[in-house]
Every structure is written in structure tokens, then in C-alpha cells.
Length: 219
Image 1 (cartoon, rainbow, N blue to C red):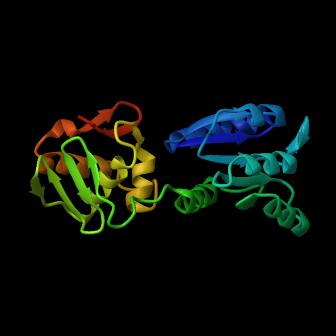
Image 2: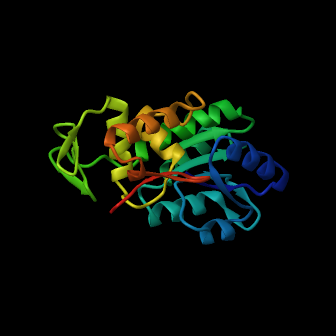
């Protein structure tokens, strides 16, 4: 899960980056409007509106025009009602006024990502990845033509991985898809993946990507 943090105060930016990274996010810090607009694609933007080389509202408007599905949270000291209304009108999905707690920011990030997370395969649309065949409507799975019985969470994990077969899926993305939060028991996902591997009959179908998460093998 990649976050672009746009914050002109480098000390504040360093602290926020560190705290977000400890929560499992990949963070790019941009200290100016120019850097924000030149940054690589991301899943979500935390946007300060007071920037040294431009108005954060214009940055918000430009980012929204580029990607209507991008999650944007304004994180700013501008707390007046007119500022909130303007921020939301130019494209921000949410508005957080400084000072704030990381617990509140985490909750707002999760709520926004739940709304913007990629939708599951359409009901009735069978998905085939290598030997794995998934029917989301019937919630059935087979491997090499052999039916497999999975729990609800195991099935949802497999569907999450099947959305981008062969691509490393971040642990946080899978957690958000399946549990609607990036916080859970320390080894919750690992336990379910281990069980899923055993039931599929080929542990290598779900590969571990060190430092990232998992991917569904395509062959």
C-alpha cells in the first residue's frame, strides 16, 4: 500500500513517514507542490494544503483530475468550515485538521481505502489462473479439475490474489480486502495462507514475496 505524504515541514514529514512505515505502508515524502505532482503513482495521498511553492488546493484539484479513483486526505492546520468545504469540493475525500492522533489518521486511511479498494471479480465471472479455477458467484474452487473446500476467509484471500495473478499483492491490501482493516492479529494472514496452501494441494501456488506479501502463481 503506497502513500504519498505531501508535507512541507520536513521534521513533521519524517515523523509521519516513520509512523506510517511502522504500520506497513510504503511512503514517499514530497515537501513541495512540484514534487507532489511529479511523484510516482500511489494508492492514497495525505496532502498538506500549505506548501511553499503553491496552493495545496490546486494540487488536490490537479491530482483529482488525473485520477478520479485516487484516495486524497487533506491533512492541514486550516480548520475553518470554509476551508473544509473548499477542500472537499476540489477533490479531497476526507479532511483532517492538525493536530491529530495517528490512531484517528489510521482509521480514516482504512475507511478511505475500503471505499477505493479494487472490486472483486464480477459475480458469475469464472476466474482461471494456471490450474486454479474460481467461481466467485458459487464460491467454489478447483485445482486441476479437483474441487477444493475452503473457509470463507481462505476463499476471500484467494480471490484477492486472483485479481492480479502473478503480481505481488501487499499484505495490507489483502488484509483490507478480506478483513476490511490493515490491523489484525500479528499472524492472522499468515495462518490463513498456510491453511489455504495446504488445501490447494500445491503449496507453491501461493508464493511468499519477502517484504511485500503474496502472489498467485500463474503456471
